[in-house]
Length: 289
Image 1 (tube, rainbow, N blue to C red):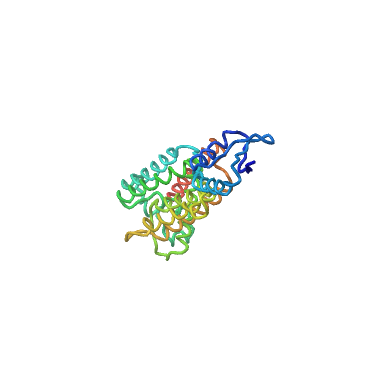
Image 2: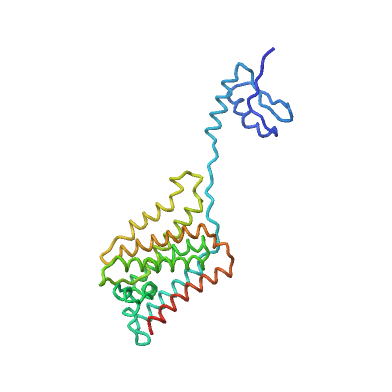
């Protein structure tokens, strides 16, 4: 009698259907047998090695492609971006019109010597000042884009609290390493802080980890590439400030990935958002005193 060998088993007959079709297409005889409370795919012993090789090749060619699990969407991110745009454009208009008789730039710019003398509010007020229309337009565009990404991952309130804090720390670090005469204004430090927050958060939460460590680091590589292409050009570009914002944002993103504050709920998101806005307003109140 011809001897048969058992190659594959499954609890449901349908689970062996594709493998049976592979053998049929190769002209290999086979049958499905019910034994020991499960289904078995059997072939003649003489064709056992050939059948195993064909099924192995089929399995290698049909490895399922892992799907990217996108970061969970906390909210649209739009609310935070609108607040950001209102804040920087309001200060720009007040500055352009010399509102209240103030010299807004003198009072709020990042001036290393002044920060060293204790005027630490400048690390926040400088984020809302801009030199001209082109300057604020560029920061509005890039800040809105990355602010939306951050808001979708973390929630608008938490995202902008992290961005403002990281940008302030970035400006403080910039003031430490720059000479006493150094001055700067602009929200670009906050923009790169947003890039760092998103990159670190997405990386550490492991949304691309199933593709291996290289592709898992894709958000970090993207942040570095963005800094290289947009953060180091132009005569008036504050390269150190951009780098400090990126690094501070990255550290904040790492911390947030561990804390899980994005799941705290709507009330917590409102608190974080109002805290970020209040810090800017309070910094200007102190600057005007």
